[in-house]
Image 1 (cartoon, protein in one colour):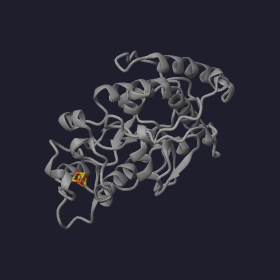
Image 2 (cartoon, helix red, strand yellow):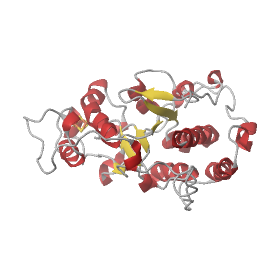
Image 3 (cartoon, rainbow, N blue to C red):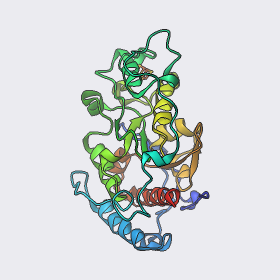
Length: 298
Ligand code: SF4
């Protein structure tokens, strides 16, 4: 798979933060649509599958989050050539330690934990001050064998209340976005950069993201996704170690290190709810994600 560009990066340079009202908008400077109709017409991907997701793009751009009609997956449920490899075909996973033993002070840290141990470690974590104000931790949800991992930034009020990432209207829109490329919500794995809600939905502090990073890195190591979809500014900055605007980070395939995992940056659905005119760009990013996953299956 080669590095692919699908936008001209000097077209937009917005911030595209996700959770708080207005987040990122002050960093937004529009310089054009950034989405060419020619691309939407199927110019970047031959074949019937491409045409089908083009149809879904129209649906995605038109729909509101409450419209979550199901879609058959061209990646998961279509022809064998388009189907992602089964977990067993994706190469060996790192050995997991024995289940059942809760983490303790003697444990060597999240990098050695199994899924169950990691979940317990997060639930009981007091490594940063966010534990003082959380209702509950928000660990992550989805298929632990998925080829696609979606990483957002931090729990908001709804997530803090329900203990699940991407719920509420932003979560519903994320579901529509995923369905547009053939994934039901339960077929991907969804997590955040940090696991506890920052008070007032403020941006997480650097010491908080640093304290929580080992948990996310262990989730990625356990999952071994074929592609990471990074949504929003906080996610992209932390995963890529940069402060570039989302508008400049989208449009190319990055690599997440450790693991050398392909990573695509797009807008946070909360941002898209505030700026629906940007859905076209997000759809362009989703098409690219679809192509990357398909290329990896070839
Ligand atoms: S945000 Fe992460 S590091 Fe901080 S208390 Fe919550 S789980 Fe622990």
